[in-house]
Length: 167
Image 1 (cartoon, helix red, strand yellow):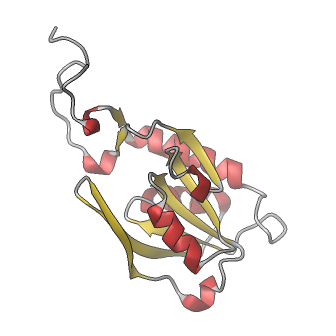
Image 2 (cartoon, helix red, strand yellow; image 1 turned 135 degrees about the vertical axis):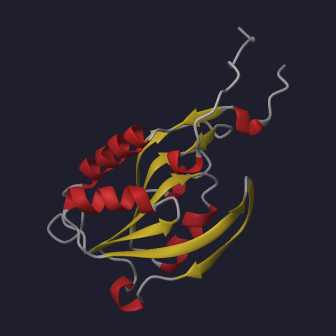
């Protein structure tokens, strides 16, 4: 048995890695859209989806990028998902031809809410956990449900104790 807190089973993502993984997601999505393989627009789920959405927009030459702001976390505690800001309604329609991008699907609550609003959109995340996988159409890397992902925008350089032992 261990006395570690759940968030101490961490998967640390560097800027280089999020860039590589986001490009890999773009390559996976290339040619998969309903408009002769293309996509009309990207909607990034803020805040985590902003960096991957920017990289994917660049890789796939998608010039129309909007955001949807959904709050479901307060620090590391997950609550009820709520929309704080919606994307342009005329652009979105029912979501046909739209890529909805986020960094991670965890429980799936955020994507479930957004999917209800835009049922024909294509949902893609860089990382996925098992509980949330049914809510995402395309992803790159799966991690266990009890892994906490540390993204580069949340981190600062500092000393960290070794996983096992003190040497």
